[in-house]
Length: 116
Picture (cartoon, helix red, strand yellow):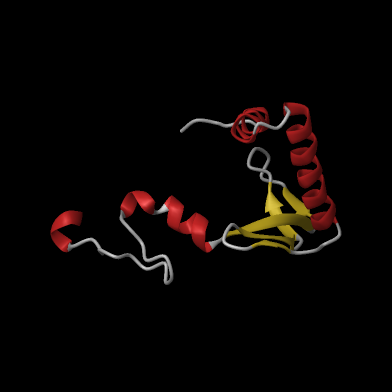
């Protein structure tokens, strides 16, 4: 599995659209900045068929330092949760078979002989 950087994505989009790399970089960075800004405000971001970003608050808890076995208080923490959308879910599962465009259900479910 390869790692794709923001720079590589910018280069691909610039090449694919014919737009200048500087413009694509400014647009992508502006988009990412807006996502961070909205999540910082506690807002939910929904990109239809792609997925949903939400802020969640992890409750305070007690943990244990594994080295000293000392009990440690961990304060509440805000984190981001991402829920995969329908089209992305289908794309990720595409290696497992074909899916109905409307329902998202497998067209040819694996048989017992194929899985064993």
